[in-house]
Image 1 (tube, rainbow, N blue to C red):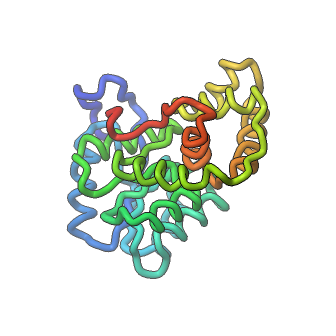
Image 2 (tube, one colour):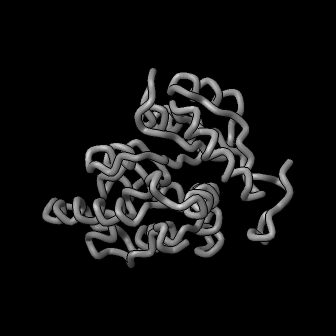
Image 3 (tube, rainbow, N blue to C red):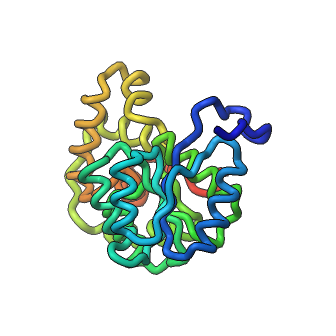
Length: 232
């Protein structure tokens, strides 16, 4: 086990277990090096294609999967959809060179927790892994701008009104609180929080927490507190 880094005083004896999937070995090696140098992150498995990623995710059950989009056998988008159906507890951070709108929206709709570009600094990617592990939504600033612009174009679509409680829950989710933390703060159970979020996703026509929060922000329903790399 890696020793906690002095740059991360919150690191404890249980490292964040990560699966890294990218079809370029040199890229994986570089990412693995700076992730494990952080001190509180351990790369438990590597995959060079989407099918291998699914197999290793099944066997290792990491805390966070760091996925590229374009991979042989199955794309990062397909792996994300599979994870949401089979291992919803595993966080997904997409780390890619692609910032095209169709990729961004497809990743968020598949249920990824974060989307960071490979041009980001190592410290930003490390923090992205930590935030995803804590249940937060993470977006590269350039990606956040694209999402907001796209969602702004959908404002004219009819959206069913959210209840005050649903707005409270979604606002806290946008601030990075986990379901358990939201439940404690509002005096309700985790299951009730999950139910509120599920209804909110339906009303906002969203497929993930990140997409729901960004859509609500674009509609002016909640304050823009979603975590981006600017917050790191």
